[in-house]
Image (cartoon, rainbow, N blue to C red):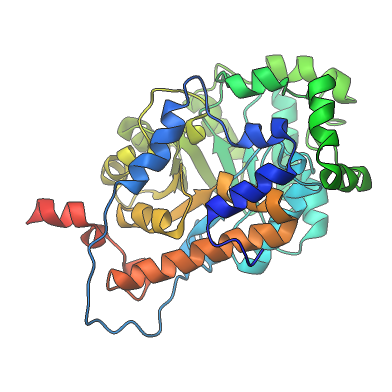
Length: 384
């Protein structure tokens, strides 16, 4: 892992170790993938204001996200099928995050269950909830997350219906995956991955199978997932969940100032500016291009987080400079996981923290909590 100097290095390593169908699942967007690409491109176009002759000793990246002290304002984003990037992937990600001092967010569509992750780490994690038609199942998920000690519920709002991802269709990747000749050959070409998967019992959707009605195995899962995402999700249903969940509530998928104000009015403790990594509405703006307007719309009424395209510590700093109080990495930590399990996730976090720390210093700041728009070259020029 020490040979990986960038997230791109980890991506290359993961591509060589993970079967293509699962690697493509992480490394893809919907339709033309234009929004997926824009997330990264627009972040990279934001320039910093270099400063000199400033005392740069005693620097710190420590901060807070949703009431939790963090070693840097970065959380591991919820990602589906994580346990197919590497055996026990969610457990390994949770352990790496706990040891690094940042939040881990478990997806509803995880391979390892809430209970399995809770048993494997002694640090609290966050749970991401999709709203399903089966409200009893939703309520049960909330109760399980509360029983496991999850200190925040991340409610995803932008997946009422599924965006079309061409790579997944071509690879036969669904829930569950279709195991044809092509996919079997892909797995056979990754013997280390296969051996690890044979050693674990976590090979199905642990939060769903055995918990949802009439879903007892993988064969019954496909029809259930096809009909369960709730297209009627509205603010009334969000309020119902707010009333049931006693801890921090984070609403993810906000891309509009009006929606941000509605989230604040409906009891959100934090919101996440996110376009689902470009995996839903292709042709939507990048997450970073709307961040400042969302921050300006809600002010101090609700904590604003950012998700979308982060592949470096510099990207984290760009989002913080535009007003985010915390950020999420999805693909970046998945590449680390695929490349080297828990050690790979830790390496991804090390890379991001090192880049965050050094770039902050070059901009003349010692404390990440003092970062603002003044460190951005484009904003500084406009003000002048």
